[in-house]
Image (cartoon, rainbow, N blue to C red; front, top):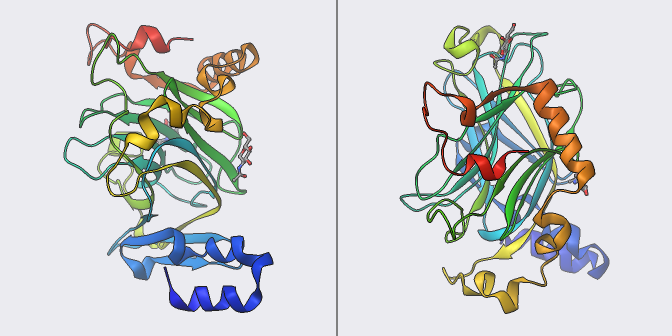
Length: 289
Ligand SMILES: *[C@@H]1O[C@H](CO)[C@@H](O)[C@H](O)[C@H]1NC(C)=O
Ligand SMILES: *[C@@H]1O[C@H](CO)[C@@H](O)[C@H](O)[C@H]1NC(C)=O
């Protein structure tokens, strides 16, 4: 926690304490290429960039086990082919857990792909891909993950685009439930795979590629000193709002929304990729809508 920030806060007084505490250095650490990370505490935003030399990554100081994690993001404008921007939860151990939003760039006027994925105990390979129903490069839009003991829900502007149920009781090691995760934000060069399967690499004439995150709303069960029990013992966690019934399963209205996303915008689902998985992975039937 930065001493200058604390001093500023105590001088300004109690009224502003919560915004003081939300300063970049209080909430985040620069993980990769600080020269490509530009925080703006006045607007509670962070812009990161990709150059031919390096991308960038920043992540929360705290790690969480379950919670609600939402940010407003404006994606790389113009020609973003070959770039990958990411907003994701990740643990830092070997055999890590991870819950992803990845944005695969495209040429000007061609659609960005939103790829979601989930890793449990080091195993991923659960990609889902959609196009968006708006241009994500002209305005900020809201990308959220709700992660509780029952399911993970990915939302875009409040519309569910995917769910992943906890079926640990029938399929052990299939749900992120043992490892605290931090929230990471990054941009990197995905020339070899991101756009039309790698056919369109980054065009460095358009660099630097910029994207902005703001309005971070991260409310989870914080894990201190690697002690996860406050987040996993029922007597403690059940009162957390993100564990409540309305986040344990989709409402019928949300089911309709997700069905519409599947019908109109989904372009890939690992569950139906028979080349890769001749027998669909066991969790697929539980997550079908
Ligand atoms: C994101 O959208 C949700 C509605 O689903 C809203 O509750 C939340 O406040 C929004 N978050 C931000 C950071 O704008
Ligand atoms: C880019 O646009 C092409 C069509 O021009 C489309 O096939 C592709 O899915 C789009 N997105 C990515 C990330 O390749």
